[in-house]
Image (spheres, chains in turn green, cyan):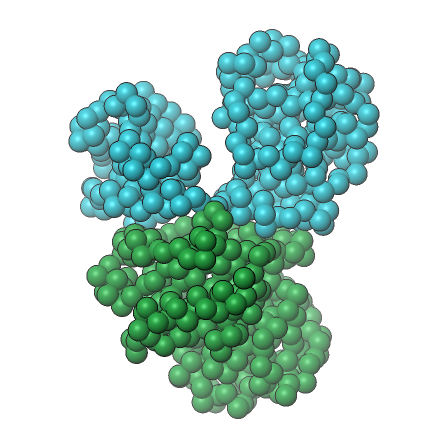
Length: 318
Length: 318
């Protein structure tokens, strides 16, 4: 069970430490990477040795976060800090060796399993990057353009570019502060939200084809199979950002995106509007997340997996 | 030629006036309507008689701006104020009778033709609604939830939900202030940016099917035919926002969306990244617009229309 600490205590822990290894979650997104690289850059600015690791390959679109950063010499970590990692399972295969050794976790998921020795948790915040920004301020590091771009990306991606209900005025003002550091937010937003590969467009077309409606059209389910991924030539990068699509349809309370995995199970993303609690749905199936966006894993085959998730949806919205 | 006046002078003009008619531009969008209804509500709050008019029917998605507002008794206007209307031509048919009588224009388009007697112009601002918000402050009106929702919508729609390069930190902070008034920004953003009908999803799928690539994949062309519109059951509202899709594809400099019209001609939207000038392409074909977004009309049949636009694209990017 973690000891809950404040932002300023977390800054104190980091100031006292060195050879800091920062862990991002697998299937890395803008918030875990923005938090990780933002923090790493700030720690280096105060003379610390630090690096970020992730079990999965970091998608190209996040390269700007680290491409002008010096590669850290391979050091034996003395202090391990996880960012935006709610559960040690989310460390993924490669980083699972550190599961018992996380000294500090910085997170905004209320589902955090409190595996770290110390935990800064703020479930009110839209992004872990907002907590990291406060820690960076406490460290006395000035936000340069690179740090600001990392923090901005974390906030922008976790709020759907300031679109979702988790976008507080504080989140917007913090993003505004990052704009004032001279970041190219248009480039970041174009890369995060607009740019699609040809393979992605093809995959999207097939995914839209698969869309089915249930429970009086209040639930829409989209399935992405291995066959579609193969046929379209889509890479891991191309699979991101599909989850919101079903819920964008008028009248849909619960949007479900199911992605077939190599082992035949389905990774399920659930998005809801204010009529339903996504984390309640997913927790029925051993998953978790936020009220409007949550996830779980269900075993196949496809038809049974769809039935399983529908049953959970039905029990929550009916 | 308009006299340029300040925000505080504009507030003075409005304070001294009554029976104020506010004009929005035709093909109304979130900024002209948000500016109009935001200002109208504020004027009523200080006891003025005011109403908003538009030549075109206001799309349903903007209903929230006025549905709980009292209908103004039909009054003979004594003071006419245009918001976000750069040119009297944009008043549209019905409102063209007022073209010579506009006392005050509030606008952010640097292309404003200065037709009004007095003009508050700030081309630095992403939205006219930002200028209106400053005027409302000068009027001494407190922002209630309804006014704030109007102003927020103007800023959000004109910045593509804070995504475009015109998003200043000031724009974000002003939007944050509106959030603090308790608006339901998620509802607004979902309605403005995310909500799609089932017919729209079906149309999008067919449009993606039609996508073809040219000029070494630097140009993508998507065609929306009358048959697709009919088959999908898409209405006029469902056709909005398709134009950006082809240019969102990685490596595409020029994205072309061609929409077949009833008379067999094609309305062409061209979107470009920083490699090409959309207005240069369209002006070769008798159209025009901005550097990144422009349009023109080409006669059919489809294959010849595609050749025509490709020739223009080729001459500009090669």
